[in-house]
Length: 406
Ligand code: GCU
Image 1 (cartoon, helix red, strand yellow):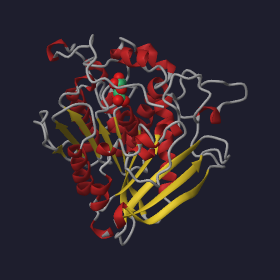
Image 2: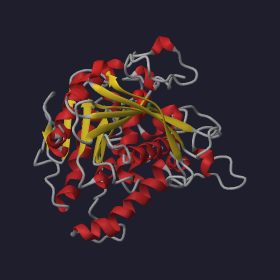
Image 3: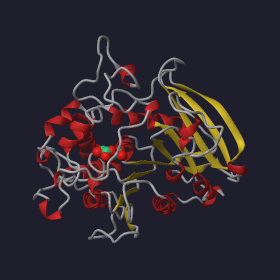
């Protein structure tokens, strides 16, 4: 059941700043035809769709459809006295195709018991099953896992603190949407969209990251209907491969009010052209199922991409985005993650927000900087820690507020 293991600093990659090649970043505000984008309308109506199409066609792959008409959900369990009375708990089974024997996702939701109205809610996929996020015996265990792992990812999901600060937390196991294995494309949600006779995505269609992002939008479809959740204040977040996923989900689905990427690295917030730590070729070789097949054309040829990852962040504008790094996570290129945030700023500014708010340099550890685009680097390795969550919650408080629901 376990996802392919993440290693923080494999050998054979560049970890020297002085070895970063010279590169020129594409300008998010210059259209394909060379014209300058100088109004919010032109960004919205023409340049943004153009960039979105490029990311779809060349990297993450096209998402073949939205919410299936027959999709439905069932609340399979709920309680009003979870977490020692501090929270309401709900477990919702989402049948993607409507069929009980088709792919389905279990969404676990905690909301503060004392909320007087719908609350802003963090939504993120987890790596090992909902039962690993908190040692709550009521949480369903996915097929293939057992009691021994209950609560063992608790350190990454400070449920008490999140609920204690007035937020909701919704999470689902990413394997429910698409198992993270180099499969033959027979499992997960991909087959739901195959045309007659098709048995794998076309070269420019979605891989697993695209599927996981789609699953996050389906979770939001439910959350928008839950009376305890403020559907207009859902924060999509993720760590590592799931941070790549949260950015892609936030870029495609503007119902997400705020987007957080934690240590997302190559294919996430880090600039590909820096080739620092993990590279496009390396990621496509180790994880051929994450992106579209077309993305292989850019192995060792990052400079031919019409975009870099700062433009993924720009797609989220003017909604707030927070990019978090870990100092010791060189594989994910913390500086490259900062630079993406930085170079996305002109788009946020064109749309009337403060973007990175004049920050010119990568900040020291433990200092949250920026404005509508936030950036933070903490000491330590590739992980999600309490410090990360403090920053997530501070940023969400700043940009979404929560006073009115308590
Ligand atoms: C590997 C992979 C990264 C990914 C990470 C993870 O290290 O190379 O791209 O972010 O796994 O998901 O933990």
